[in-house]
Length: 158
Image (cartoon, rainbow, N blue to C red):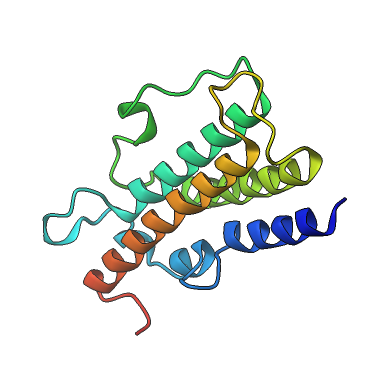
């Protein structure tokens, strides 16, 4: 593998795992009291649960799109957001967190397995590089929202 490509892959992996300029996903969701996952403080439109579920669905969709030409994306926007404001159980919460980690690791594996720049055959010009940057950008945006909600709920370390 070309040296420059390996440098880019290493940086993309760091970015997808939380970058360095902001809080990563794991830190944003650690030690949240379960009873607060469904709260929407000060009229905000989403709860932490809804944001985390949205991250899971969108990241899964980008992973599957990148791998599978027969993948059907959920209907926008309703297919990307859960109706429930809170998880039904702590087990459901744990499963969603595991799914996010699994799909992220699968995408990172996919990054190293192919040409970053080549157009995805079933797309309209998207590449694995573009999908990696989109996952990182999308996740960072919603991770920041999770941190804001935690601050408003008084459960963020200052």
